[in-house]
Length: 163
Image 1 (cartoon, one colour):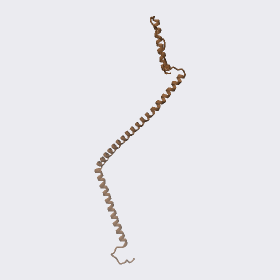
Image 2: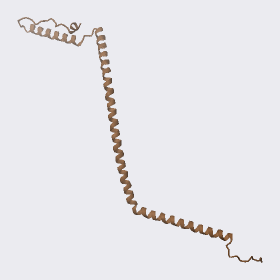
Image 3: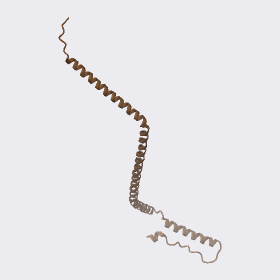
Image 4: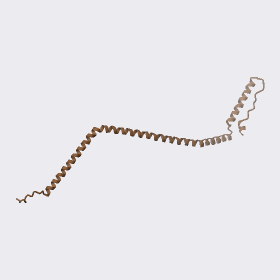
């Protein structure tokens, strides 16, 4: 056997390291235990007050949704009003030139019809009036009425009046 050195009561470096490690392990275990207990306490509190918090969050969500919808509807109404105003303005601007275009078109068609010898509305009306007068005169003559025959001259045509 190997002789041992005399026993010294002072802790060896290995013993000191072991006691420090043991103290650190105890401290870590205690901290972990406290964290665990704090988590369990938070869980218990959340269970107790969870329904209240949930209902409160739902209520806040409803209020936020209503405010958002109201704001969106206001913006939509404003946009629709602006678009309607712009459309009215564009319609009014287009109406003037459109009327001018219609007038030019009608004048050109009337000129083309006149060149082709197609009678105007006024000329046709004058012709109808003359036919009616002649028909009355013929009926009066056939009926044997005595008296002056109705005038068979046509009233002045609208075309000659317009020229």
